[in-house]
Image 1 (tube, rainbow, N blue to C red):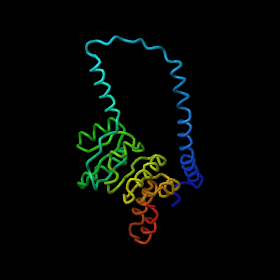
Image 2 (cartoon, rainbow, N blue to C red):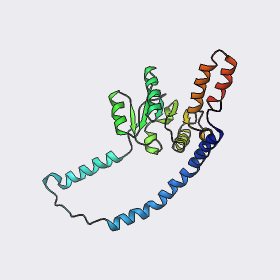
Image 3 (cartoon, rainbow, N blue to C red):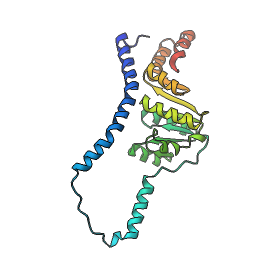
Image 4 (cartoon, helix red, strand yellow):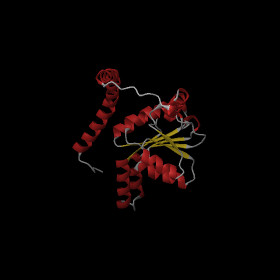
Length: 229
């Protein structure tokens, strides 16, 4: 359809490839530097003055507070849902998908890390798991073993790829649907095990073509074929 000049398409493709290649290297560099940064912070941190333990923080109470903090920092509780859809991300795309699932009375839960969004979902009686779905404990709380479908509504292809791998390991039969912004991201996610990858630009193009060529079923069919990889 030539909606973008060839140079523009090449730049988008190159950027996507670089993003996919460089993201893992960036995370490795962060992991390598983390111990050094922590040691440096410990050396430069000012000494903390010890405060006396008052009546409200006696030894037994201190232990209770520590236990409560440990429990709060532990893994989130696992859902009791089965045969459900796991929706990753509740931004503009995820919100539309979630509304449709709710309207169809399809059981689903949302994995989301934005506090404001989590509060809204809770108010709407939508089950949630708080945190990043790329985290093993967070993802396990969504019961991927018993889920029927995984819907990745997040825009980050590298993070989505990690989640696809985790889902396939937990449940080889789960149906995985993801979003992408380029052909490179489509290939990346398909290669990791996604069943369906939908690219936004293709869907927009298909919608335009359907409006323009609505009276020609054959042309509409040819345009629709590559819209879902």
